[in-house]
Length: 202
Image (tube, one colour):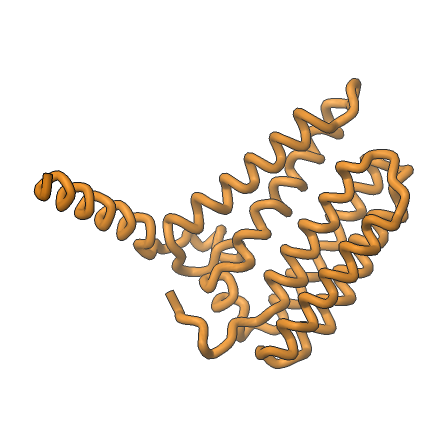
C-alpha cells in the first residue's frame, strides 16, 4: 500500500511540474502570452476560449443567424474569453510592464470588439457602447496609476459598477450581457492592473 501511495505521489508531482514548466512563446504570440509562460496557463487560455465561445454560440445564438455573422462572433468571443485568462498571467503582465506605448496600443485596439458586436447586433448599440466606452475609459485611468492597492481596488470598483450598469440596460438577448462582463474582466481587472513587486516572475 505504501509503495502504491508513493508512486501516486511521485506521478502527481511529475505531472504538476510538467504543467508548471516554463516554455518559450513564439514571437508572434508574445503579445498574447508574454515571452515565457507555463503550459498550464496556455491550456487554460485556449480551453476558456473554446468552452465559452462554444456554449454561447451553440446554446444562445438565434436560429437563422447568418454564417458570416456566426464566424465573426465566435472569433471575437474566443479572443475575449481567452484574454480574460491570459491577462491575469504574470507572463503577460511582465511583457507589457515597461512598454507604455504597447499598453496604450493594446487597449486602443479593443475598440474593435464592441464595434463588431454592434454590426452583428444593431439593436444592442447601448449595451456595446457601454462595453467599449466604459471599459476603455476605466482602463486608461488605471493605466496611468502606479501598481498597488489603490489601483487594484479602483479596478474592482470599476468592474462592480460596470456589471451593475450592464444589468440595468435593456437587451433583446440577455446572453449578450455576458460579453461586457468578460470584457471588464479582461481589460479592467486583468490587463490594466499592473504587476506589483510582490508578484513572482514565474
